[in-house]
Length: 142
Ligand SMILES: [Cu+2]
Image (cartoon, rainbow, N blue to C red; front, side, top):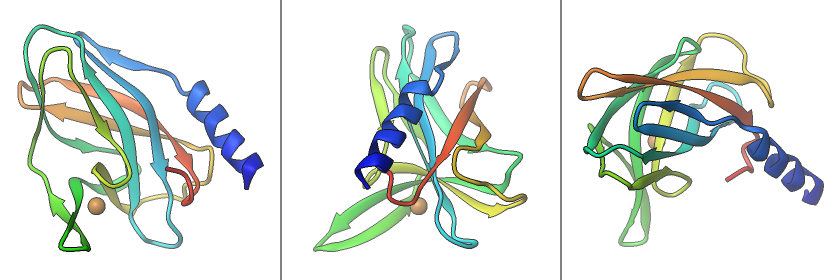
């Protein structure tokens, strides 16, 4: 378990940074779940530009459908909401992480194993897109 945790940290450190003008995605990882359950996409997105950007969605050649969700706990019950857009102010970082915003990747088109690289393109309201390479990690990773 501990060894596995070190392995995950090593994977994160090895993950590259994907950037386009004014935007930087880091620590992109795809938490796999067994069978045909959807995978969760986690990353951090930093707006290094001078204007707000609005993330409106994502797509991937590996999954037929990619949605943006937000997990929340209301009255002690965990739930997921579909999110249409996420605004990132200049200088701000939005974290997609366990318990909050995440990508939900559904209907896998091909097998994905631990350590695999999965391409996901983030789409923005102004028509720009940012290709990000996600690394597949185990269900126990955060
Ligand atoms: Cu979800």
